[in-house]
Amino acid sequence: MDTGVQDGAEASLERCPMAEDSEEQQRPVAQWTVAEAGAWLAARSGAGELVELAHEHEVSGRVLLRLTEGTLRRMGVTPRSRRRELLRELLQLRLQEEVEELLSIVGQ
Image (cartoon, rainbow, N blue to C red; front, top):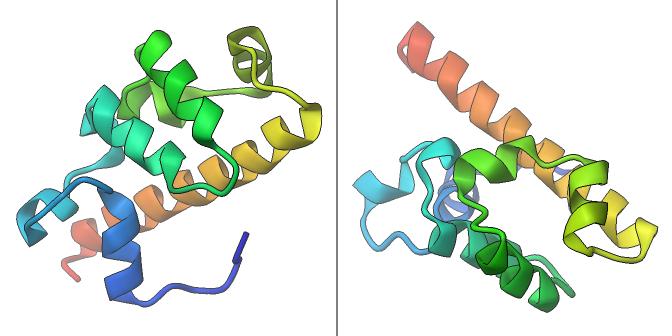
């Protein structure tokens, strides 16, 4: 996982993985569909099985933002190291979402 600061173009691409125009790319993660959340998971390395689990459990963007280690374990995500890696990626996504929300509040 790259923990470096992303430039605006890279951040926009990660925001909404299925978006084709810039308006959709700015949609908050909480508004992502199950397919969009699945696409985000598919973009994570070694996450092929996660897409299947996401569809099975109807993981939308709102649900994606609320996943915990316990939830991932109950969904069948193994091993523990994979759950921890995904949780780090989800934390980065949550932080990115918060930063963008704060920037929109201050008008940037």
